[in-house]
Image 1: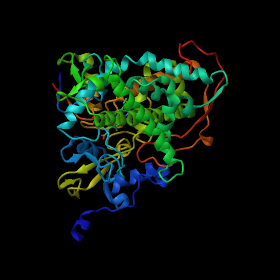
Image 2: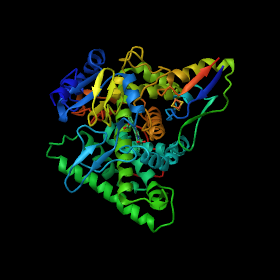
Image 3: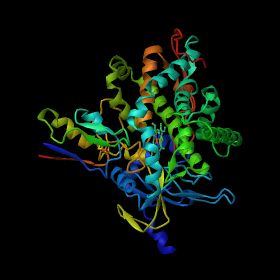
Image 4: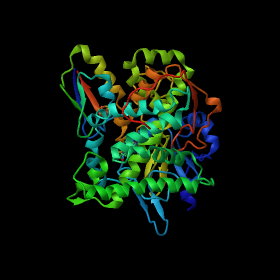
Length: 420
Length: 64
Ligand code: HEM
Ligand code: SF4
């Protein structure tokens, strides 16, 4: 045991969930990359923290050694593995918390539905949600950017994708946001969890309805009718897919778009460049994804003794891959702490690396672009007020804004065929 | 110049498409990259090198 402790070299007191980390992370990661790129912290039961780009990509690519597999027993509450530190006592997400060979089957089952063409096919509807949401506020000249716009657009896009009724957008959007920023010890937390449970209950009901209906174009219908390995998919698997898609796709895209709009308000020259020439958006978009890295880091579980950059990991250890630290590694990026909206090439890993790399990235990219275009077209003189806004009190998993007061010159509603 | 994609490494970041849409495409099945042609005309060499430098998985190889 003592000898095992000796192996945990480069000890630091790192806690990605702490309030200090919200402000200090760029400096903290800079120092860790320099002085102890694979560090050991005793927090949350002890885990490794990797901060250099090359180490993180190598580990993400070595999925046999660095497992994502999670088990959870709802009766005892016992949980092990998975991609969060601390481990969360809820059923696993799929495909994200599975390993090969199961992962191949789950991922293949979903791929087509998330491929570039499938994402592109949603562009018009996404713009329609963005415009309909702006219609609610455009005549007043003010809104909360997060709760009225960057939150609901991904929520509604995801509901349509799943096959859930759009009228319930508010009951869907709010809990998915609150779940991420409400501290687990807050008195509000049980209600947030109950509201999230309601969303999954809606998924279960719709899934069973779809079983007795002819196949439709939505995911819940796809889950209800298609087979995996020659058998129907179970309710448990269906919920794990929904969990991964809903929690992986909504608040991340919200955080990305909010950060970008705040940045552009503070950098009017960049704003003008993008607004005047939206063909620059795809390259700029990747720079925002790099710089703001909405998912700061995720965990893996060590399946055999292995050495990474002089750190001797043992079977059973856990390791936090800090995508946000990798994306500011000066070995890979010039002037990594600065935003350069024309940065290219840009080999960021904000969507992860290796086989679990984000399946929803094409969808996220389309949502981001359509939200930006709607802002350019309809509220071009928007002003955000970060002084009055609130950051998440923990950024260890998602780095976002709770709210963002915003004003603009009032404008006319436009016809979208959808009243919210 | 010639270019190839190491299929086992490609996971669909799409940086190659952004760098050189003339030669790279992404599959409608799984979002992974494939090539329209392995021969790189001189006018596209710089774009292909950018694709190579932009690929986080080092899945793109070029040869003279
Ligand atoms: C800016 C927005 C987004 C960011 C930053 C992001 C980030 C990530 C990251 C870092 C991973 C890798 C997980 C790992 O390595 O353990 C991932 C996987 C995943 N993401 Fe996203 N994501 C975004 C949007 C979306 C959207 C819109 C969807 C769905 C509509 C989605 C669904 C998924 C799924 C299902 C996986 C698991 C893939 C697998 O395990 O094979 N994500 N995402
Ligand atoms: S950038 Fe690399 S990993 Fe991504 S699609 Fe292109 S070849 Fe594949």
